[in-house]
Length: 220
Image (tube, rainbow, N blue to C red; front, side, top):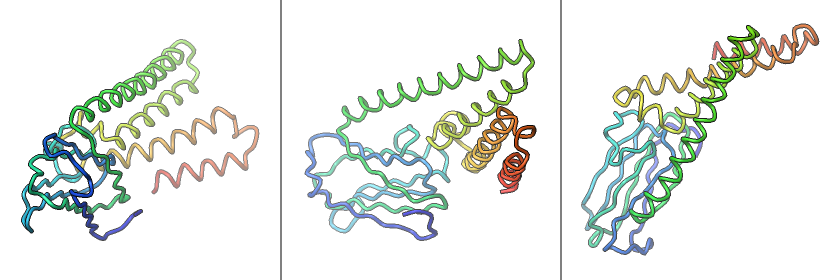
């Protein structure tokens, strides 16, 4: 849906989902940057269960303590509809997945394992290049380490890990760090390219284009 100031409503017919009401189900919305998200389980025109959460609220507002939005669905025997209300200043995305509880935690384990390996690789790259910088005093290795660090922070922010682990009670700070990490990543990548390719010496026209890009990234 892109960027929009409108409020979006979605409705799911529980009968169409063909759920086994004897099982516990988990409804996952795999986009952690939605500002405000409300879910209502409705039976006979009355809300049987209500969840209100979002990136603009403390992390503890999430029904399940994971970076994504996950809602445990119970007592669906009499329920007819699931209503979802979404409003956000960021991009409106709503990728929905439905799991049985056991299946959800199994796939969650695999996902967390992959994420841990990904950030471990990034951390090892940062440490390795910092060590080379200390030994060689070549600034390119320091610039590369800062670039990888800012990229890791950006990825962790967009995937919700920084909010979950570092500042769960500060949604405003979380929004600020997302913007700062985006700016830092764009700036550092451009500066690393300028330095590594020695554009100031070899091609001053392209060098000035990159410097202009860096200035615009910092101003924006």
